[in-house]
Length: 80
Image (tube, rainbow, N blue to C red; front, side, top):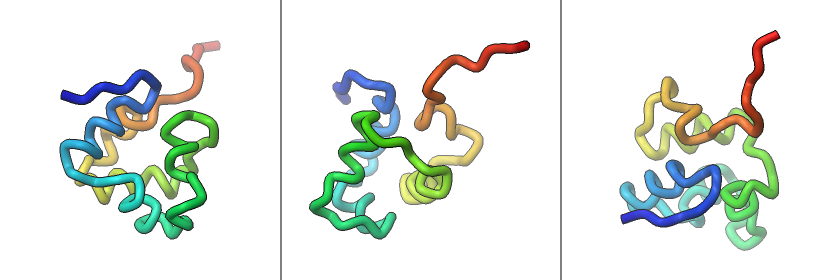
């Protein structure tokens, strides 16, 4: 069972299901594995770039059509 309490819970659960660690993602994205870039993004302290989201979805084998499940928008989109 996956337990996390933030807006990236689905992403964290997918990582656990696929046995992908934050270090794995840091290496995939070319981050310094010790600078906390992935941790900051998962905690919502730093935004994900679109190219990063695409790479993470690809690494986890998740179709692009499900991007908003794993990378939900900051705020509700309101119609004009």
